[in-house]
Amino acid sequence: MNTIKSISQFHRLLSLPEPKHPMVSVINLYESIFIEDKVWDGFVSKHYCVALKRNAKGKIKYGQQHYDYDKGVLSFTAPNQVQYLDLKTMDCENTGYLLVFHEDFLLKHPLAKTIYSYGFFSYAVNEALHLSEDEENDLLEIMYKIDKECQHIDHHTQEIILSQIELLLNYSKRFYERQFITRKSGSHQLLAKFEFFLNDYFDRESSEKGLLTVHQIAEVMNLSPNYLSDLLRVHTGQNTQQHIHEKLISKAKEKLSTTELSVSEIAYELGFEHSQSFSTLFKKKTNMSPLEFRQSFN
Image 1 (spheres, helix red, strand yellow):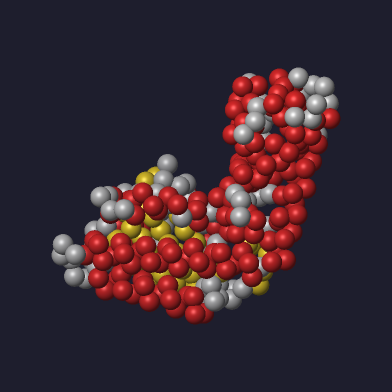
Image 2 (tube, one colour):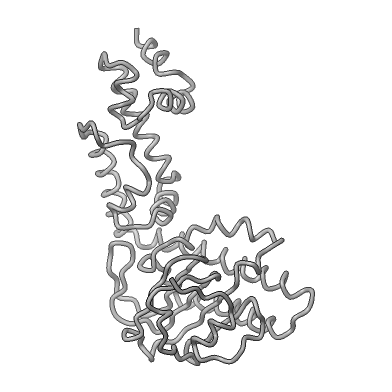
């Protein structure tokens, strides 16, 4: 797997002059020419990248839905994510900007820890953020400020640029939540599919189904785990794992109150390998052990 280790290397691959700052750059795609290089066949980068694509035309896949969208499209990638680029599909008429910053640029700054809380860095490209014209302008203004600051490197530069990056990420978080809400029909279909899968899984009688995981549900729904959790959190106030636990405890209560199965048998039917793990979770969620819950019905 090829590795893009520096901003300078990234600039060379886009036929651009040396960057103004060695750790961060705002790249104008209109001025870029992707050189023919085997690196695009599969690579990882040591950088965070925020890509704002303009003049995106035609149908765009958003989660499991398709939409006609002709405005800005924003996507995010984190360091060490495997990427591929087919130069044959590149549209020379598309324009936009890339904000690229090396992971080491965050060292000794609070953003180094909090950047992991921005789930959209692990979203798939087809779960990109679609922007209104005003939203796009808000983010472009921040990118322009970062680009300008790169021209004046001193001991204030890092703090100022990272403050702008954090502002951009917070705006993006707001815009993502807006998108979850405004695309209600698509979101509601996904929520209905999620609820159906959850019910079906726990109603299914299988000795090999195992304990349900967030990744299993996300894979079935063709969504990234973080995207699914953020979608659920906006609409329901709970993430995917919380929904799984809620359904699991509900089924456990049903079995404890309506059957004579032992706690170990119930734990096994719900997918637990060890009954102690089930009992620990049950008590954490209900403040009672499974046996105490069952005895409360006698």
